[in-house]
Image (cartoon, rainbow, N blue to C red):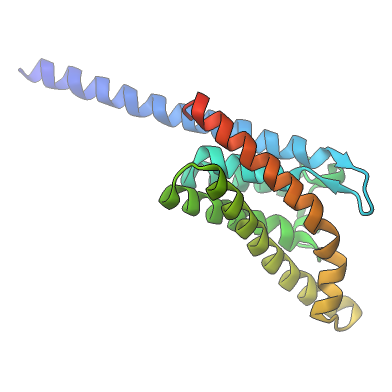
Length: 194
């Protein structure tokens, strides 16, 4: 009897360990996906990367814990010096610089997307709306950070000025990336179980 209980506990522990290992693999893969997306620069009126698309896909496919952790891992890897941010940049100077709030804002994007998908379901419109709101939260956090950092070194900047420099040029590209990310998440969720 005792032997059967030990065997059952060992089997259960192995299942838990496998799940944790799989979670770590998914987190690592999606952190790498975000990094690769950050390196891809699209020439436009203002050049932009696919970084926000990678964040939205990670959050949409992995769920609350794994999606948010993949973004955190991506940020921490960049913080310690791996060139994973846009333009192959890295380090505390980028993360804590005047535009670093947008990178930190990715955490709030992931949380927003994950929560909406968790409570409203894995539907195309839910992905799209949650990603739009997630990016809006990132814009808000990043713009506040930018205004604070800019005013410390260069004098005050108005909200309109900050938005015209840091948000307005990216709205249309971000909407396109969000539409693509929502499409990818909708299609992949029907075919694979992450």
